Structure formats: structure tokens, C-alpha cells
Picture 1 (cartoon, one colour):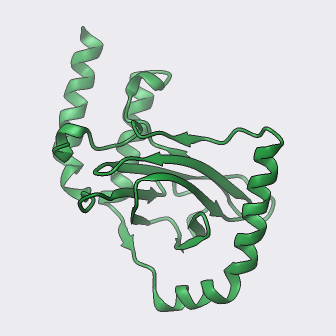
Picture 2 (cartoon, rainbow, N blue to C red; picture 1 turned 90 degrees about the vertical axis):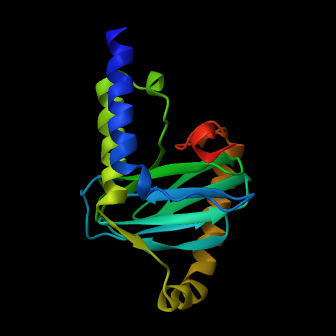
Length: 197
């Protein structure tokens, strides 16, 4: 009972503190936040993609909001490595993917981690609370990244080969049995009640 009351207390605090920072998707759309809650490798830009679509690049201190069609998506990010995340999104829901910097040989590598709003899927309630607070602070205390014309021009010039090689790598590894992190329709941050669904 004490654990449940603690969870409810922190959920209310986080809701009041940060809920106004999160946008809601347009009718019939899904919304995905890409965040960087950790300052490790803060100068390194991570590039973000939805399948073959380039979404942009940003470093620590920024986040990206991406509105898209519901359904299946292959999100991936490029730094020293390439990391993939399979997603199934539902209309009217908000999802959060945190970009966790990893140790790389020459610069920070990236690992995409879907935020799971179910505290039961964490080792303990404190781990869940720290993760949630870190991600929400990364949104409320950062600047929203908007792709510039320069970034789009760079993408058209330089990204075509990168996209082709990366999608081929994903397809090959998937065929060989590699399992990637997934984000399900129920991994949303904003509950059905909050979105009015």
C-alpha cells in the first residue's frame, strides 16, 4: 500500500510539474519525442530517422518532436554506431524515446531506449522515478529542435547512401535473428484518459 501511495504521489507531482510541456498529437496522428536526458557526449550530434526519412540531428540540451502516422515504424539513430528501435504507434498517443549515449571508440555511440510509463517494468520504483524525472527535465529544460533548411540540404546530399546501408544492415541482422528494442502501442507516455481517447 505504501509503494502504491508513493507512486501516486510522485505521479501527481510529475504531472503538475511537466504535463504542460508535452504537446498532444493532431487528430488521427501519433507524437514521438526524441530526448537526450544524459549529458555524456553532450557535444556530439545524433542523427535521427524514421525508416528512410531523415528527421534531423541534435546534441544534448535539445529534443525533437515528431508527428507521424500511427502504425509500424523503424526509428533509428546514427552516431559512431547505428541503433534501431521498432515501434507500433497508436493515433492520439504520445511516445518518448530517450537517446542514451554509450562509450564509443572515437566519439559517443547511441542507444535508443523507449520510455515505459509502467513502473512495474523497472527494477524498483526509484529507478522508474529517476528515469521519468530525467526525461521530463530533458524536455522542460531544453530547447525544441526544428530541422533547418541547411540540415535538409545536407540530408539530401549526404544521407542517401547512409540510409541505404543502414536499412540493409537492419534487414540483414533481423534475418539473422537479432532482436531489437520495441515500442508497443501501450508504451505511450500520455494515458488514454489524458488524451481524451
